[in-house]
Length: 358
Image 1 (tube, rainbow, N blue to C red):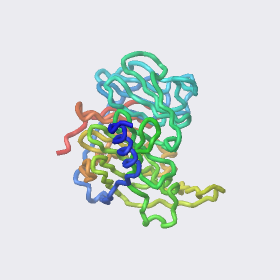
Image 2 (image 1 turned 180 degrees about the horizontal axis):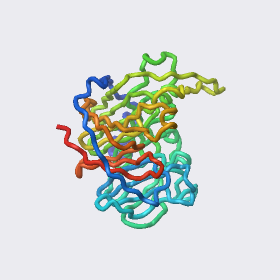
Image 3 (image 1 turned 180 degrees about the vertical axis):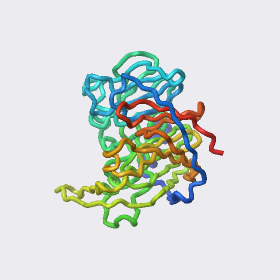
Image 4 (image 1 turned 120 degrees about the vertical axis):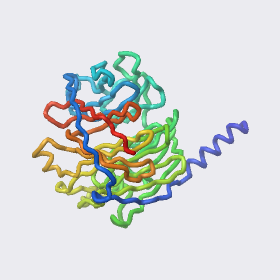
């Protein structure tokens, strides 16, 4: 064995055992938000969009993923031109065969300018697509195997590694290489404000939410759907910052016996939901917040109209109050545009001018 290969293996083993993530908790409330900025948007309707669910911006394009509930004969991913707000092309084929995707659980932009990736939860694949052609099938795919199979959300952390949130794991963030080898663990579930007897699975369920990351600044964020907490990992330092607010509440829940290794945690249906999306820009973190119960959302068309803007270290910068309810957001800090998927009867894309936060 060469000294070079031995050094690589030694480093890999050390990283796999490394447990990082010193913690810091910050809080904010409606009274402590420094500034509230009202935004007025302009809606664009596209006949091709059926049940748009998630949205990302890359270069001069919007990448829109459909809900898994749409007719599988329709394409699961759409590409829009942000300069003209026109439809460019579709991507993806629903299915379980080579190059096909079972669903669009998440989208990652990757490091290449002309490529993006789709995370499919049902068939546990990470699929690459090109923005330079009209080919519908994925050009390459990575299958989740071994421990990597238990990752439910993932974002590229380098050209060969991904940062993940796990279904059942003692750590808040876990990094794998594309061969499925665990490289690093970040943070541990140790919040005794909840319950000391909670299992890792229960803690993962309570903190289930939306996951996003940015390779440019090595910041990875999970925003809770049930608990109003965002977890910010600075990969370079290994530090995790939790930001609680604006209500800082732990939702009511019940534990249901399943016959398995852990009881299932069921959130009370009357509890308000917290975050509906999160994006990590080069300069700020953007959390789309709901604060509405399922009943309130069923009785109206509003889902989320507030976006909390944070510094990368978790400090609150401001609140953006939208005149249009959205279910997902994308941010282009360079062109100062904010995009959202509307929640009305004919969902489309709404565009806002992103203000200066200085």
